[in-house]
Length: 337
Image 1 (cartoon, helix red, strand yellow):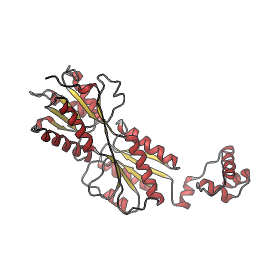
Image 2 (cartoon, one colour):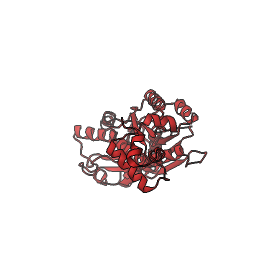
Image 3 (cartoon, helix red, strand yellow):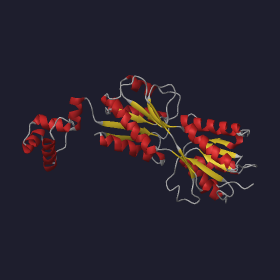
Image 4 (tube, one colour):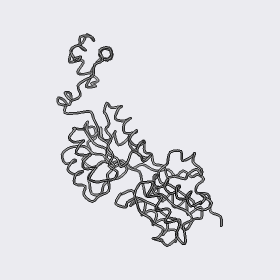
């Protein structure tokens, strides 16, 4: 195994200089840094991360806990976090919870045992957030992404879900739709609860009585969106439009429409919260509320690293709120009188 002394000998520098290069210190002159990096490549030298972490008390590793990597929203979010982490010399480990609170506790426990320097988390629904509070109190930096847990003093980067849902509902109302169905996730999830509230408020402001039969709550899965939208569309008075409060459930609505032989938007309009892969290629092209998922992940990782390295000194939680964008496409064509 190649040692740091062999690297120093090949680069014609001291062992301390090699250590400074490995630590990323800016005090190393560019020419010396170049020689050290060249020597490491020639000798195929890889630093012992475990040994370094014992000395520096930093593993240069971040954890990411998300709901479901198969949901098209999360790969973009993780990619943004990963790009920001790598740019600062950190490795990113990603774990899924399937929105299960117990799995979230296990994931957080595993990451703490591996001595990650900080964690990005999309919190699972549940009333017991003691594991998050305990982690923060232990000194482990946490940043919430997308979902901000209630009552927890935690840094966060999220999108204004209420604004996005209002934009979508106002668009459907302006297009002439009055019976608008909603398929949404578990309202224990903060974003789902906020989007439901915005749906109700938009109808009330338009002078339309909220019909509880048009509200269906399930989870963030395609099967749930399919099952719930099928129930809606088979009602005696079905909706003229459906608002799917997340991308996966939106796919389920499309499946139900096709199975029932309904045309979109001629028979039923569809708007989806979250842009979906190939949303502008599908037929019909889908109207969506697009969230800046990549930016959310990037900003979250940068905020987390600032906390880890002491650059962010605010004693109060930092809250970054991004704006969504309504992208109007064919699936919500104006309703004929």
